[in-house]
Amino acid sequence: MSKSLEELQREYEENTVKLEQEKRKLRRLENRKSYLDSGSRKQRSHRLITRGAAVESVMPEVKILTEQEFYSLMERIAEWQPVQNMVRLAVENHSQPQDGN
Image (cartoon, rainbow, N blue to C red):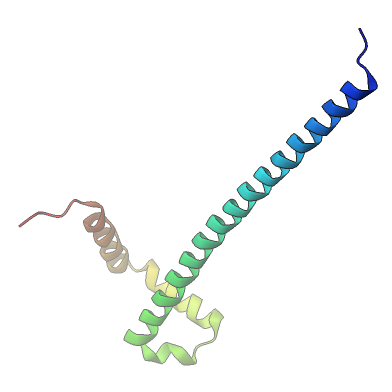
C-alpha cells in the first residue's frame, strides 16, 4: 500500500520536528562536554600557576632564569636520588588514609 501525500507530508513534518529536537539535544551535550573539558583545563592551569608560584616563593632566585634554564634546573633536581625519595614518600603519605587521632 502506498501512503497518501497528506500522510507522507505529516510524517515528514513529525520527523523534521524529531530531528530538530535531537540536534538541540546533541548541542546541549556538546556544550556540556566543552564546559567540563574547560573546567579541567582551568583546574590544571590553576594548579600549574600556583605550584610555579610556590617554587618562586621558596627560591626567588629562579625568577631570573629563562624557561629553558628553569626546566633544565628542575630536571637536574628531579634526578637526585634524595629528591626522588622525598617525592615518593610524599606521594605514599598522600595516598594513605589518615589516622583519626
